[in-house]
Length: 622
Image: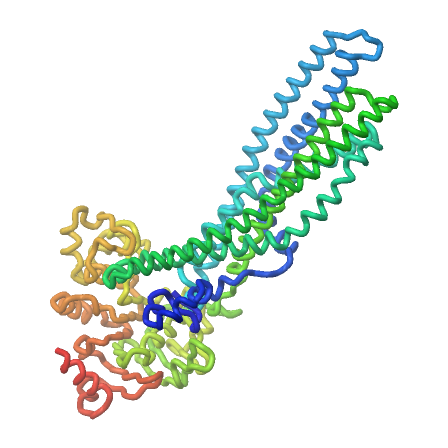
């Protein structure tokens, strides 16, 4: 988890003075760099961009949705008019001659209209759900695809849980907006316009009198909009923090239990949970304020309707039937206004999420193909570092003018104290970061001039903390080369001495392993990662503390296999256990980002240098 340098995690806070820890607020103890509230005005450009995801489906389904929408709205607006006719023409006509036939006809017509309205609603909901889910699918796919392209430095600054929230929670919050929100917005707008026209046609005086309350309601409600938007952004931020901490807690549960810090972790989570609840309550309370505003305003409108309507009936300008219809239209008038208020709140929630989604989509990879980059053809493996300077943070050089020549097929061991630059060098070979100055070439070609895919396809990496995916043993090995046959998978497994333990598992190569391979030992997981890397048949093989988790007996077997497998490949081996790199063609000793010594084991042991000091230090602890 990456926190701001000035902030502290819960575990770190235990080491400080208790009074100081008590004074710290949750915000001070747990603030992510990317989780600040995005405080800016409603962005119509972003709004347009968000709904641009509906364009591919506009021609396919929107005409059908529009037809169903108009059909349902027209039938709904026709019913009150038929009701007024039933009262004025069939039940209580001015001439006193009521007509049951006309009443039955109008009643049947209303039933038919309600049936049409129901059918139109069913098909409208069906089509809008299809469109909405396709839009969500496209948006989630775009975000996940883009995240996979982002460079290591992006993930260095963000906890995994924070990234997870963007792909799941933030996108899920847009589902209601796309499945029914947009269409309901259009329906309510059409219905409002239709009702206003009808009210003015029935009696323009009464229509204007009733609608005089609308501007008052609008002015009051707008005061809440900015506060509501920021409140929902804060809710998203707090949820992101909870997910991030939860992700970290699950991954670190063994450490938590080993140090009996469950209680402290629970207190910390409770504080975050309480903070999230308060934020939700605040935003929800602001949301609910729209309802009472509409109800109170509607109440005043109803008072005006019956007071002024009674006067118009007495003066002969309005009939009882039209007053009833007018009352129904006014009731239908306030409903869409109420829904529009709720829709605006929903839109604010969606905007808060979309801002966070587009923040990631707009993030450009720090490392990407430059214009004109060409594929790297099959390499021999000559690698040259020329005055390479690299910084993780500006002003703090991790590598200081590195010069290193590696011939094709050579095995290079990188040794040195923690933080000396070993892992940095191997990360730069795969161009997972870009250097500040100097150049790195492979077979004479600057790696910045070739495409990333063609470069990384020819590099195999085995890390100390190997990752095992959920799936079968065979699938995990095949991840190195998806086109590999079962025979090739078993061949590389035998080469790294993994075949025997695999065949002892209940399902052999078809054994299902849990996430991160928790059912396997550290050594077994490492052997699978060896097989995966070797299956890829890379021209450059990188072993970053790859044998650190393997017992001595297994390591001896792997070393024998590697002698054969490393032939013809350029290899880089990072190891703290110096016994594993005795036979390397060249040993490079690093210290504080600089190369201090170079040579093979025999040459370096003759010097009274850093390498000899490292060997003596290890022997003292044996």
